Length: 190
Image (cartoon, rainbow, N blue to C red):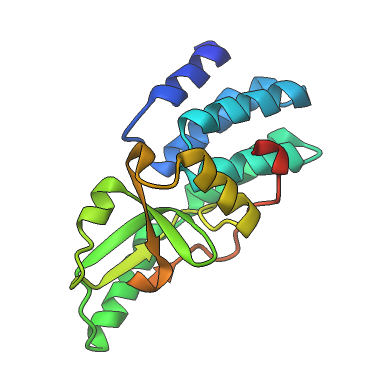
């Protein structure tokens, strides 16, 4: 598939896992990695169409701030491929149940900010006021405040693109990957 067509498909796709979105995007951006302006324009365009994906922001930020964007893309894809999110969640929920805590829902988050969490529309439906929920996140979901604010501004912040903002303290636990590099500050994305 031609790189531009690949980017167009990624801009339109719904119902895709964060891991696959990062992997496909890294592949689609590969031809633009040698030209900083083309890479920036491609990243901005894609984020305009997929504005609620923390891992996508993370990939773009790593590629744009690296002296070797292709290596940065490979590192991000590798982090997604080796992430054991489901296993970590299963272990944590088991520990909580053994400790006598009820866990009613495990919610995959799209992005995590300093005091709020962005969750998909279907995920938020499982979170009634009496529900004890555990949040899990793929690599790249945790954002520094400046990147979080940019992500929210781009997403429209309140329900646009099927996402909702939830207080962090709404979750009994938030499980994020360990040993994964954070999202570098990249103001040019916003």
